[in-house]
Length: 332
Image (cartoon, rainbow, N blue to C red; front, side):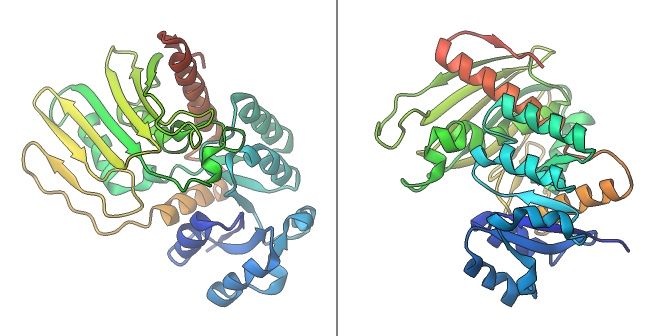
């Protein structure tokens, strides 16, 4: 069975504690290399994953990736403002890219990334892991099969408290506040539950409680996504509280996940009392396998760059609504 080699670019918490261990459960891809700013950080991957010193690259060796045939994909796990730069470099090195969400810091950067993919003939996929989680797949089935009748509402929230010195609190490095970091999960959920894209948005930023910490970014944001059929999805995201919640309401009942967006430990409740319990799901392994298998078979990525660009345009519209207080149409 063919397996695709993936190099992790940026080996912070997510790459080290979530993505790398996921390779122990993948069937269609494997960890081929890591790229780090400090070579000594690669020692962990030599010990834990059997990589050789030659499979540890530094940033100034990035151009050498084009000469390594074992690397088919570069997985970008960097602060948001670096996504575009290194995605384009990886594409030009002849590698497919998996880019963590959000796709970029701005819509313009996302478009530049897509231009580079077209020019190089390589693909960009976005790291939306929850498409492969069984709880989210079950929520999609409940809506699609109208288990409780027609959908009447969606309510979701995803928030956490980052350290005060985190790069996520820098608008220059992140492209925004909690909306781009975790609120994007709410956008994703609404889109894959309904099968549609919002036509317009409204948004309200709550007063900032710490002007030094939240300098130039929103602290807590409420936003509403207006769907083509008139359904309004209500969403909340914050960097000063903790929540992970997704609920669908329909004519004859409801279903909810709480927690909803975590790596594991998701819990489902339903109005009919039916119990739905799945074993722990390797979300990241399933995500990387699905992308690798699609590319191996010459098929489109299940998480294409067009999806990432769409979400960037929705985010852009939400920020315009937040700043203006107006209902903003989303232009795709």
